[in-house]
Amino acid sequence: MTFLDPEKQFEIIKKGTVEIIPEDEFINKLRQSKLSNNPLKIKLGCDPSAPDLHLGHSVVLRKLRDFQDLGHSVILVIGDFTAMIGDPSERKKTRPTLTFKETRSNAETYVHQAEKVLDTSKLEIRYNSEWLGKMNFSDVIKLAGKYTIARMLERDDFENRYKAQQPIYIHEFLYPLAQAFDSVALDADVELGGTDQKFNLLVGREIQLAYGQTPQVIATMPLLEGLDGVMKMSKSLGNYVAFEDTPEDMFGKLMSIPDSLLSKYFRLVIELPVAEIKEIERVLADSSVNPMEIKKRLGWEIVNSYYDSARADEAKEHFEKIFSRKELPEKIPVIKLQKGKSILLVDVMHKGGLVNSKSEARRLISQNAVKIDNKVITNINHEITPESEVVMKVGKRRFLKIIPI
RNA sequence: GGUGGGAUACCCAAGCGGUCAACGGGGGCAGACUGUAAAUCUGUUGGCAUAUGCCUACGGUGGUUCAAGUCCACCUCCCACCA
Image 1 (cartoon, helix red, strand yellow):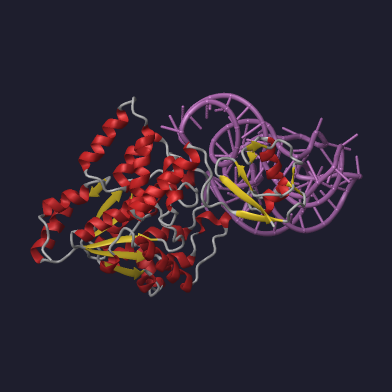
Image 2 (tube, chains in turn orange, red):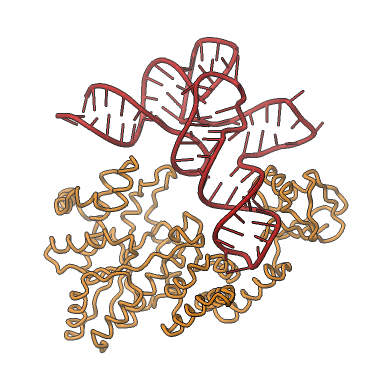
């Protein structure tokens, strides 16, 4: 493998990052790597408890892909050890601790999904139980002796929780140290993460130094706001676009992002030449152009990159059909009812899975949200007598086809 | 270890014995307007429903009372200050 000029590599990596700390050390590492013809070890930690990857993850994964394309070794560290302990920070949700088996299968799912962005043939996967699981208590004490409480409390999460009078458990202080120790175990040259990881990544530097290693360089990527446009994209907030979403969902979800986020999405989640992004931003600034067209372009590009152009075309067509022309989708869930037998509408909605309770169904009816064959139903005691196929629509995107049998 | 404060629906939060399925805000959902954008306005946000009706819910368990989120006891957990 011959490496590109260090300066060229630096430029490629730097693009899209928020920070590279410290930049001069990074250039030095790149130079040495080229001189000795040894790839750098690039580390990314990931949590095996939530294997549903989404566009938020893709920002960091894409950067990892850049490293791969430049010939460096990318190591994915699956945090199976920490996951087995179970993060108590959201104890209300009684997060179940994962078994060994679960962490492996979650990791597989993770890698399988990451394949859409990374070159998995060149990916090294390590589990941190491999080294963390072997540490004994004196090893842990030694590790804990390398960092102070005051520095730990500098971390935003902790500071906020402390101020908000939320509990912080001692072992949560050990989390950053455990992650830092991963870097020691791997002798990582670079660690990547979102900006929310900055603290942890920096701890890695100090701990490596304390264990006699050359500190890693850290690179942080911007956090991608979710569909609501404000909060970070995350599974728990439900504002995400998953790699595994159907093309239709992907497209639809992307159409619902606020305009203000368009430019960021173009920059972070698809690979377009800089010039093209600039052009898009110029058009966006022009108030005479409807941003919807640009948003459709975004949706198309993303579906194209996770599926293919045919699926992207279909997704776009699907969207225009249902929401622009307000037609019916091709695939509608079906409920079969006995022909000629009357049944309360609320019962049908409930049985058909459109609502969680009949009360919710009544609420929706009284809010004019329910249509049968495009006619609004206003009576909560409305009865249906199935004679021929009809289509029920609840709100904008819930459909149910009633078939008499 | 001591003293004091606290635990309420998805989140924050009011509640001071009956009028509490619980004020208000956020979020969600729906309607109007739209570009399934944003902003705005309106409604709604425990379940069952032939019901001025019943059931479930205010950290847990008991108790006082005709009546308890509200009072008492004990328990569990959290926070602050002092050690």
